[in-house]
Length: 108
Image (cartoon, rainbow, N blue to C red; front, side, top):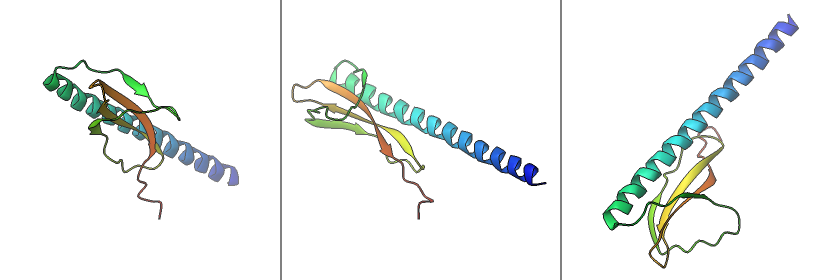
């Protein structure tokens, strides 16, 4: 009986973890799509080329002259991707992907 309960507990734990991983991936995909759409509209309206997405690494110097887009906060536990689009001091358009902590509702 103990073995059955343990097996059920382990199964439930792994099911919850895989569901959370799937929803995190889905949230990241939606955020990236929204950022790319907003940046594409801006690039088209200003007649600038659409930038490639750069992954932020600690220590990279960002030359932000004009902020174009920032991803909204995500109500999800754990780390999620966030996106920022901006123009630098030369007027070139950039898009950066970085990690943030989601707003975990159950963290109280």
